Every structure is written in C-alpha cells, then in structure tokens.
Length: 131
Length: 508
Image (cartoon, rainbow over all chains, first blue to last red):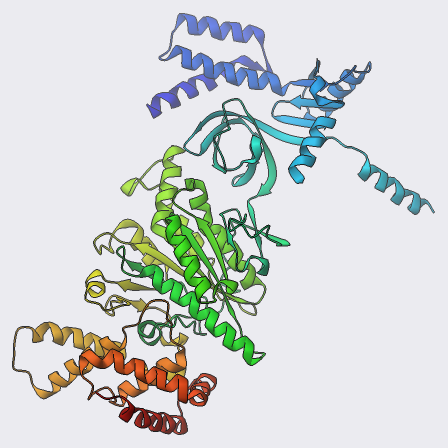
C-alpha cells in the first residue's frame, strides 16, 4: 500500500517535471502529458492525475500574485505589486485582483505559500492572538 | 540635527502599518493528533506551526510535497482545507522560579487553576546537550533520604540514575521521597543562612499517568511542604500523544534554566516507558519506518538526547535526572529498559518479590548500581556504610544456601543474623525520607552492634526508637554530623555515648 502510494507520487512528479519549461508550466506540455496518460494508462490513473494536478496547481500559484482587496483598487497598484513580486522572487509573476470585503481595508497578497498581510482584518486577527 | 530627524522617521516607520509575510499551508488530512499539510514550503524542522482556533503544532516530518505535524491542543475543530501558518519559532516553554509550586502542561500552560504563570523567560524545548568541555565530574551528593540508596547506591548532583521495576513496586514513591527530602534539606539549609548552601529545586514530569495518580503525588508533595520547591509537568494518559512526547523535554528545559543560572535541580521522568509508547504512536501515524517492537529507529536517540541534557556544569549548576522505567515481569532485557540502562549512570532496581515480602523500598542490592559510586557520598556515610553492600550481598548468598542445611557454623550464623538485621533496618515507610545525619547515626549504631541483641522482628521498632531519641534529645550532635560531614574520633565517641544512653530506653 505504502509503496503503491510512493510510485504514484513518483510518476506524478515525473509528469510534472515534463510539464515545466523555463520555470513555468507550459499548456502545450500539459496537454501532451495528458494525452500520454490517456494512451498509456498507468496503475492507479486517478491518483496519479490528482497528484499531478496538485503539483501543477502549486506551481501555477507560485507564479501568480492573488491580490485580495477591500474597496476599490487604485489603478496601477496591481501592476506595481506584480513588478515588486517579480523582483523579489526572481521569476515572472502575474497579478490578479479579487475583491474581499471581509478584509475591512487594505490588501492581502498571496504568492504560492507566502501571504503578505496588510489588511485591517489581518491586523485585528494578530492583535487578538497576542492578547 | 539630521540624525534627530532620522530617529523620528524611524519611529514613524515603526508605527506605520507594514505588511507581514506569512508562509502558509493547507491541511490535507488530520488523524490521531497528526496533520498532513500541503504547502509550508519554508517550514523548519521542529518549528511551531499555527493552526486555526489557537492550536499549535510541531513540524516533525518534512517531505517533498507535504509536512507532517503533531498537533498540541484541541484538534476537534480542525478540518481539511484549513489554513496553517509557520511562526518562525521553535517550541519554547516558560522557565524560572515563577513556575515553582505550579502544575503546568507540556507547553508550560498552568493547569492548577492558580492563575497565569508570571514567567519572564522562555527556553526552547529541544536543545543540544552540554558538550564535554563545559561539564564537570559528579562529586556532590544528592540525598534521597532513603537509607538503602544513600548508603549503597549514592546519587550525585548531575547524575542520571534510573529507577526500574515492575508496576506497583514503589518506583514513584522513591522519586517523591527524593523530592520531599530535597525540600526538607532546602528548608534547613536556607534557614541556617549558610552562604555556601545550594538548594535543589525539583521538577516532576508525569507522562501517561492517570490523573488520579498525579493528584495523589501533588497531595503528597503539598502535605510534605515540598510543593513550593517543585514544578509539576503533567501530560496525563488522557492527553494526546504529542503532549506526552513533549512533556519530558519541556521539563528538561525548565530544569536547564536552574542549571544555567548556577542552581541545582532534580528532574523525575515518570515514566519513560510510556514516553516511548507515545513516540511510537506518533511515529506510526507519521508513517515512519518501524523497527523492533514497532518502535521507530530513533527511539534510542529519543531518550539519549533527553538524558544527556542532565549534567553538572563547570562554574554553573547541575541537573540530576531520575528517569523511571516500568518493566514487565522483571524483564530488564527488553528494548526500552536496555536502552535507558545504557544511557544512565546506574540503576535502582526494584523487585516485586521483595516488595511482597514487606521489604520496602524493595531495592535489589545485587542488580542496583551507581556508576558514580562513592564520589557522590559524604565521608561520614562512607565510614559507616562502606561495607554494607558487600555484607548484604554475602547475606543473600548465604541465606540461599542456608535454606538447604540446618547446621551452620557460628561465623555463618553471625553473618546471617547481621544481614537480616540490615534488611530490617533499611525498611522505611513511604514519604518519610531520613536526613543524612540520622542515617549515619542509625548505621553507626548498627556497625557498633547496638541492634545485635534486638530480636530481628523488633529491629524496625528499635530503629524508630533510636531515630526518635536522636531527633528529640541529640539535636546538637545531629547538627554537628551534618556540618562536619565526617566522623572524627570526637564525634565517634559522642555517637557511641549517645547510643549507650539510648540502649536502656529500648526494651528488647
């Protein structure tokens, strides 16, 4: 059971490596990988594809800056954040804005696992934790 | 002038709301106190991880695409998909004198209902043990107050002495007696105003114990007035295995504070068998490869790194450890007992047979040993009890042979008589440790043959009478023994005279 899971993860990682070109996920390569899996069905195909999907999603998230904001976002802010994150991480990062009124005010930027908290809701949460 | 402006600018910068960076992950599974987390790409080994709802976890398994965390606290509200974040801190517990008299959990949170702990300092739970250079050899005694131990298996400050035996043989009682004795010595020493006196603070770590047992221990310490010098770290059987796994390390961190600050401390791990079981549970759930008896490969390191933290430091204090191991049917060759025996500087082995025969504490003299030896004994104890272990071992051997024959020569008979009296003399009720000066007096009386005319069955009563006589009427002599710590000719004469004075008061 444990070795089967390990094999699934190994294959998923192999497929993932094939899908990345110059540090970015290539849509063409992903299509190619999917076609290959369709043709040469591995053992536990669903588990392999789920694991592969997780790896691709994590990689896409690493190259995207999701900007949550309460209230309107000033023009140019998204571009400025994308540029700053590109500089910080040393890879091209594209920005996307998402309205989130629960933040009360300010922004929250998520790049992969990293979250940059600059919202009132985040500060209140931190305050509550420290009390 | 510009520097002033810069300072103001810096102050403004501090006050302005800045973005805070967090590294996050997502719970993939939660089961049996362990969470598998996706993400947390920057997490460090043993780092504290913040779960929603205030629970914290420790990252123990760092794998390529997931992190295995043990969760400390309430896991009932956690679910798949919850966000988790790193804290950048290793697990730390409050330390210091503010913890004395308190009962805390594995994280140092008070559980005794006496309000928050006013600790100002924190020490990391996991710490590398002191190296070779900073250590000093063990040479100062730590009196347990148990005559059989102090005279034959002496323990020194900074030593690791294992207490091992089957269930219900009095392992915890020995540990509690030792803690109570430290409190008694502390009270006398601090009252004397001696600037050289070094009190010993105690830490009792209860791992996997029944809550009722912990309450009983607490009550015994409180009744003996020892709680004010003691910290209790409780990870009872109802706690999750993560807390049980961490509790000894938390206790060690609290003890290290005393050691690092030039004080002496004693830590009791009650018991490491249950600690190993808790770690085995965590390891199996984390899917780490299992070895003998399903324990993980690093179960030796689990205890060696813990016990190595007990030491006597040069120019600083000491941390003495009394780990407890429970055996099954007296089997000391099982996996965990042999591991811990090899790490410690000796063991006090308690036998079920002796316990059932009414010999309490049921210390097996043959199997018990202290590798520090007489280096941790005061001269007075060496003078009166130096040959005791040999005499008792001879007695056991002769007693075994004497069962087969009725005709015994006078010498053998004398040895048997003496041995049986020593056995009786070493019987001691629970939670009643004896001061070392009183032990010396009793052993002196025994060596000088004052118990020889007493019937074996009445030796315990005679010893009690002698102790009462000394405590009520020879207080000055006891103080002299305590301060001199050695018997010179003058003291020996005074002791002899005191024993002669006592003799007619006890009707054999």
